[in-house]
Image (cartoon, rainbow, N blue to C red; front, top):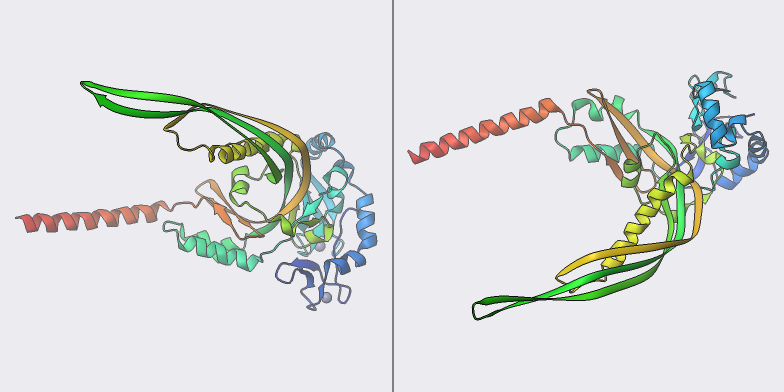
Length: 360
Ligand SMILES: [Zn+2]
Ligand SMILES: [Zn+2]
């Protein structure tokens, strides 16, 4: 058994996580259940699901072989209607195409793919859509259909796999600070430069620096919606995925840790550099960072996503589904932009004519 569907014990409706109530709710009979209650109801199911791992959920290497063989997709059966569900290789939670019920592909999140933590959705879809509309209202040259209802329907909630790296960084900065003074003596202008050896050291504990572990998700977009508040992080439990899409990682920690160290390096540099002041110039700057107590954690973090296709290009938008921070590059409507520039030229021409008229 590789799929789990969480059902209301009263009416059999689907249970999904409701961000506003921070509880699991049934849309049919309006019942709500706490995390503990759902965990108790599904204790056996969750255990069984985790025991029956997908054959392809074991290692990344095996997984890649398998995906080539299977062309990246697998078939599952919907427990509600019996229809076949086609899931992409990295999906961990989806919806049945026929009955629209949420399906958790439990076998996908076992073994090495079992997340340590999850931050549940804190922002509803309606709130994400409203924030997106507000963001659009401040931008002038968007194509007309960009915030149409049809387009906004594509906003989907995804649990994105993240690697969280913690470590202690011991950083040593050395550079030469220059002080200059000038004066005039007779016909000469004299400049005296004094050089000072500057050294700074610091111990910086870094906690949970995030890097997304999904190939198909843009790293820059994910960096742009940081930070997440880890005070709300919880031990992973599969039922949180009910009602959302979820991905499992396909980029190993070893492949993101270089990029994470780069961010830590820059963080140490900024911090130490901010303590060097009072010089007219800095040169021969060197920074050494030693990393210790490296620790990795694997977490699913919530994101509302929307893709927009415009003139053969895809524009991606993401909303941090915990804090509401939005990021993305808006498409420009050329006709609107040209219309605006055209209007501006006409105004300029009128102004010039008027000035010309006044001068005559
Ligand atoms: Zn119900
Ligand atoms: Zn179904």
